[in-house]
Amino acid sequence: MGPVRTCVGCRTRESRAALLRVVSINSTLVVDERAVMPGRGAWVHETSECVEAAIRRRAFVRALRVSAPLDTQTIEKRLNGYGNKVNGSK
Image 1 (tube, rainbow, N blue to C red):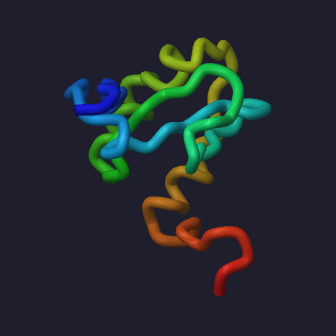
Image 2 (image 1 turned 45 degrees about the vertical axis):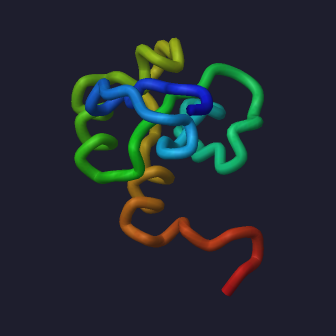
């Protein structure tokens, strides 16, 4: 089994491939598709339940060690199907 990470929403351990990495850029949560962006990252299941639990519990703020509130619109849009397109695909 490869690297294991903990989901900040449900707190279960899962393989890195099963989780989505997010980072904070200018107080905005950004999905790190390839898991190579610099800085601290938080790992979460790509389900609305886990993301909502993490937002409600302020887990992203703690995991990413930021002091300001985070803009979570980008990750919420992705879960709703608006952000699934990859670099110019139609």
